[in-house]
Length: 196
Image 1 (cartoon, one colour):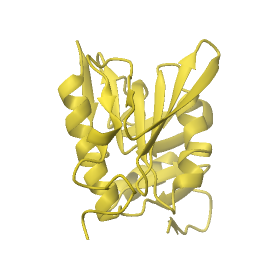
Image 2 (spheres, one colour):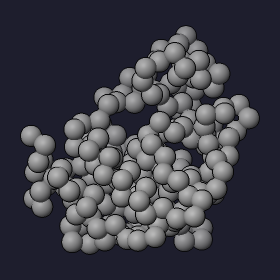
Image 3 (cartoon, one colour):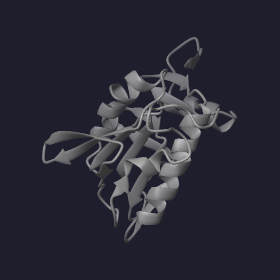
Image 4 (tube, helix red, strand yellow):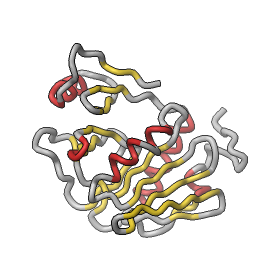
């Protein structure tokens, strides 16, 4: 469940940065509203850990895997966002007003949860797709073995869905990723948690 920080007025980005600096939790900045991000379930966090290992081990060249603590600035929408994981190639571009944010992810990953799925595959996806650097936006289910990948194809986005037994490729990676490896030790083939 998301919580908002209540101010008597719409927050400025400076208000947001001050709140973020003094908080033990991550927040996003959406249209002048500061929204707290919910913590993840055991499955969500374990899947995110598997993704970090799998993508980190397959990255190429100057590309690096970034954890969920990396903040992104989406200037065309005046939004500060986080992702469950990302890949940035080359030097991170920092906006002048926020040296801890970057503007140039190549791949963005989200592990879906019941409270965030609508945003992750809605406004958040649209926000990240507005960044010219993004080549792929990846949605990973936490209640079944399913990965959905949006890939930039010129001005369009193509969607592919992968299930257990499939493998998927992403820009910047040296090898494809088996869907089963994403869920290894977390969900069985029927989507039942192995963590409980």
